[in-house]
Amino acid sequence: MKQIILPLAILSTLITANYSYARNTQNLIIGSGGNIYKVEDFLPEKNKWTFSSGLSIYENNKSSTFPQYTLNLTSIGSFFLDNSVSVVSTRTKQLNGYASFKYGVTDNLSIRGTWFSKYTRKDTTDSQLNLKSETTGNADNYNIGVSYRLDNFYPLTVLSAGTGFKAGNINSYTISSSFSWVLDPVVLTLYPSYIDGISGKKDDIKYRYFSAAGILSIALNNDVDVKFGASKDIYTTKKRNPHTPSWDTSGSLITGVTFNNWKNFVVDFTVDHELGGMDANTFSLDFSWRA
Image 1 (cartoon, rainbow, N blue to C red):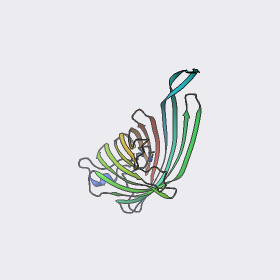
Image 2 (cartoon, rainbow, N blue to C red):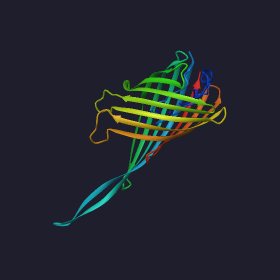
Image 3 (cartoon, helix red, strand yellow):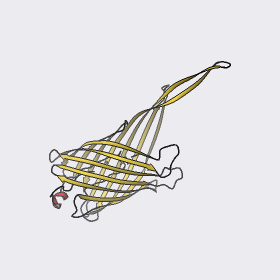
Image 4 (cartoon, rainbow, N blue to C red):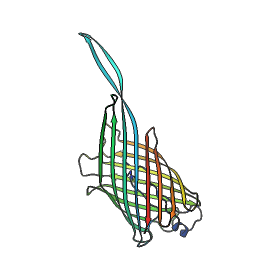
């Protein structure tokens, strides 16, 4: 899953923008890669807080075909082989939610904590139209981390590291960064990230996840920004399974709009469409409030 999935953009300077301009640019929140995790360009000032929350809905429809072979015996020593194809349709819906806080230790250094929850429903229909439904859910995932913004460095660069927990046990380490260039009214932000999944349970899948996203944000006016982007993900299991590929890739297109109509409050809506023949979309709604 991508934490989904965890969807944040804006800032910095492409040519000669100064530091004070970057510090006062409105915040733009981005939820990408199914909201696996989030990176914020804007850090709260010293002794200030930022609170964020959001919901995302992931939908995935796919059909799989399987060969079927039926041996029909008509009489002793007489038979014929019937070749056919079985079609299985799977529809997955997933609701993700998160709540987070961020506290400014200094103007450039902040600590953060995020709590995640997830509910999944999977409906499978076979060629005989038999329906099987499975539901799962959990609300025991959380992440703590630290972010640091490099001072007097362009493009505006934020480095982040975090540790993920599930049911009280460490299950991942995350290293991420963002690089932002601003040429008013356009902002380009790049997000390279790495997640190392770990687990003390024997049956859990241990994975590595590499992600890179690029977002182009355009300010239509002081209150509304639109954004367009793309992401590319590479993920692999640490222990090779002979029955499945050891690594896989996915890509998606990102579109969205951000509303800055309110002081210290931002609303962001994002649609993430997965590429590669997958009928999969993630719809995200995020809120951010600076205290």
